[in-house]
Image 1: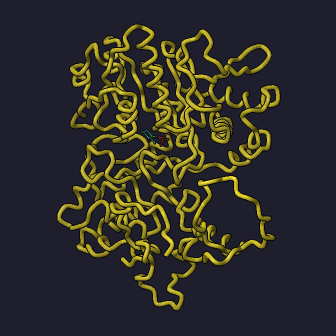
Image 2 (image 1 turned 120 degrees about the horizontal axis):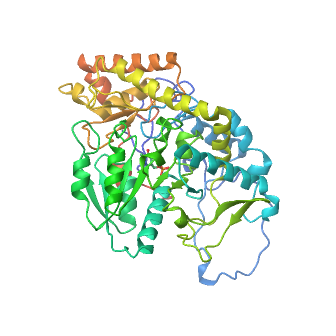
Image 3 (image 1 turned 30 degrees about the vertical axis):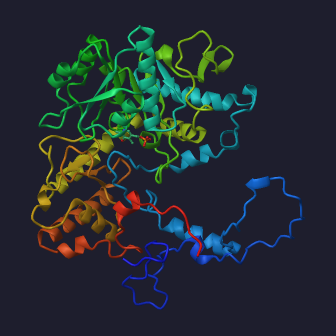
Length: 508
Ligand SMILES: *Cc1c(COP(=O)(O)O)cnc(C)c1O
């Protein structure tokens, strides 16, 4: 791979035979520093009047070295970059566990209404009653769908919701005089954020092995229970795409030991309207609005991870929360004499996400949400059956929930790895599936089509995947190991990028 003098990969080694070294209309965009120059500027302002500096030793001694660009140059840079970004609006996005589903445009229309989009968190309450009503109504839907007693709306992501729920659990133990409980049980197939959350709060993480069928072993949970255990953090449906059939037994065992049941509900899209987690004995569960209830979330945000709480944990919910009273929704901002765990974020949560999620719910209706969940599961099982022609699947004899899990057994002896396969998908115009997760499966490929995809689109994807698998099995190794051949920067060294990131442009 060719690098520039800053160590940044460039497209100079690209196999194009064009004069500009560009490939049709898909350019590899240089950095602003490479396009602009430090002795130009795109703006034409009169020189600043001279003042005596009051910054003392803090005054910058060297020039700022920012590149100067004209407005059209700047515009083109960002528009060209945006076109390099794959999105659910441009194609199927099979990232398992991430639930990249279509965000209906109605959601956007509602979220952009000035009364929601322009609301300021410090506005007088009397001027934001509509916004509070939306937050409150959304909270009611979440509690109804999950059969729970309270909801914390402010967490800003799934992982943040986990923190909130586990803090409520910690507060409940402390309230009972059992603050010494120091262990959290986490099944091996858990999302990485689960053990991270427990460890962040100072808990010792005790892994629970999975059974041969990919689900949690109740006997192993029972064996791990002790007066030191504060909680279990369990994902359902789990990250192998399977419903935990013994979840009720696990909940009963946890409660009998005086511990609480945290459920990672990021995969709620597979069961919403079908199963109410509260009925299964969960005490706290976050819901990723940005997965289950649409909302665009590629590129790392924004998100919203409200947490529903059982009756026993409800008193410990964080502030602020909304109380329904005769005169309309009322915002409770202060802990007062209550047992609330306190405040997690400065304000009330992500208004845009709330509006999108409630729009999604109201436009689907309760029956529509159930239908969406069932369609997501149907689509995944359709892909599972089609792909099973060539792909190996560790838990293949069971139906899956909303995602299909393959391993790399079928690639054995081909010289093609899961990573190579994913890179070849890019050449075919598909964003790769989730790779090497869950960790319990060798060379995992986790594929989640969601309910957004039509039969046509599912077939096109399955045909492409099978064709690629056939090519790998036929010994076309090179096509995989050197993929992607058609992406502007070809294959990047992801390990170096993560281990040795270059975050700063060094001016020569
Ligand atoms: C996405 C996900 C999370 C984390 O959610 P973020 O919003 O990315 O913090 C946690 N658990 C599971 C199972 C997930 O799929």
